[in-house]
Length: 116
Length: 90
Image (cartoon, rainbow over all chains, first blue to last red; front, side, top):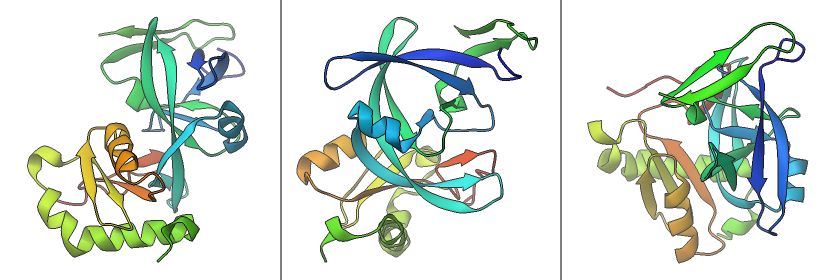
């Protein structure tokens, strides 16, 4: 926990063979898998897949681009779709499916994700 | 139509039209509700899977420069950011 945000670091295995670790804010109001700023997605060389509709908190609908990435999840490689939007990396509920999320809501508190 | 030149909004508009004009009737079954249908807006080809990732890969293999759009079957949007993702079909 930092500044009232529950965060988790994910390691990406990039198409060019390198790895990069990025800190994500766990956002239970976000129903997708991950989102990252477009600039980061471009630098990482991720492959574009398709566009899709998203509903925002102000109830507007926007069309957003999704990219394919590989992350390490519980030590295993996992294919994920990354939405290229916004400024802050977000981790959504689609990645938390069938997992248990525990957050100690105090500065420096532990955030743990375990398989159910 | 040169799909490669279309804006993101135009791709979305055409995908929606293809969906309403025929794809919807074929794919909107109880077992498909909540899955993603990915549509090639140039050829009208489409594929369905849970996240849309494999469907997108398959369609891209067929047409390397295809403009693809994903629709969550039976829902208003595919994803929400603090907003509403609700079922719109029975």
